[in-house]
Length: 451
Image (tube, rainbow, N blue to C red; front, side):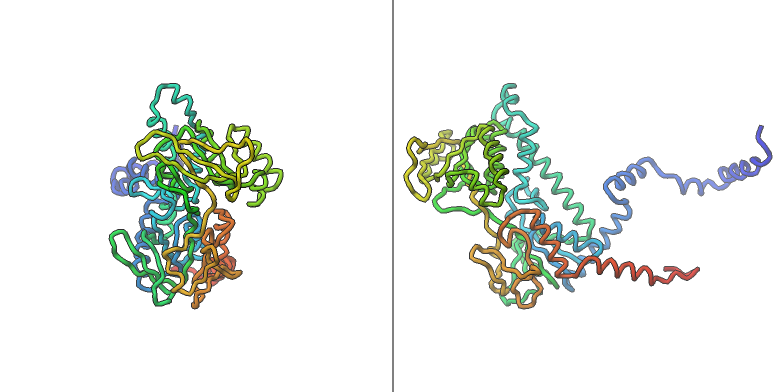
């Protein structure tokens, strides 16, 4: 039996249901709306808030094209993207424009889409490495699949991983309010550094004004003379991204991390791999690039244990590459280091389906018109900076970070340099946090007053 204390609330509720249906209807949410709301929450933001944020960002971007961005970042690798996101987000909250030329960012494309945005130079190798751990090529071949089908399975997995990374980066940039422009950036001939020109694929040129500029254009493979690079059977460490088949055998020149990584990858994919090293002692070659002696020894032992052949103390003297469309192998004639004779009993000829030269990288500073901006380079083309990562530009508003400075050509080092450059440009993040706290403490919170 219902007690008297429950009668009045029940009557009130019944009255609301009968006489004020619009009140109930106004709080009714369709399942479709709920799905959209929770999907937005799952993606890290409320849908309505995100739409409002993007509209405000678009308006702010249009204004900045006229007044000048607080920071313009050239290059959308890991250094450029992370620096742009950090500058646009709390505590800095600056207006930022990120400029990138997809065709010059590692050649990892899926049609017209740039899959390398925000990724390191070795994004393809990382995706290929993960795929090589998941797919057993011998099992696929044992199932009777054609070589083309096997390679398509491998490359589709790589593209899926890279595409997921690219889409996530674009989402972060959009949410942070970073303006993203595609095109080749360069400084004007006038020598001024308060703007850059952006040349687009449609042959139009856009001027972007900037209060500060960060150069983060990364690096490009070093290409020794005498190697007939064609992007089909003879590759460098970037053009290997465009390989269209799974080679049954591959020869790799180089003793650095990139060369060793690709050697392991192709070996895991079932290829016969030969590593050509100029140093007679492979461990010493690894020590020269900074590896610990014991780690270097273990790494060499792992290569040999994986079935990778190592040709020591030699280099390729001549290339015999068959005409396009031929299935004949590439013939490599070897010689000793610096042209010296080979040791007795050493192989003087190699045959392989593909050849990769991974013999180092160089700063990517060409076509930026840096001399006109008063920015000095070292003998290898790297940008010279001071202890604050500031270049020699007269206005003192141009900075550089990452591979564009030269060694060690590591993404982690470059990202740290990018963060340091923001401190040089805007000041320590702690100062902005103190300002925010001070501003909050000074807010008028008088009762009855809107704040």
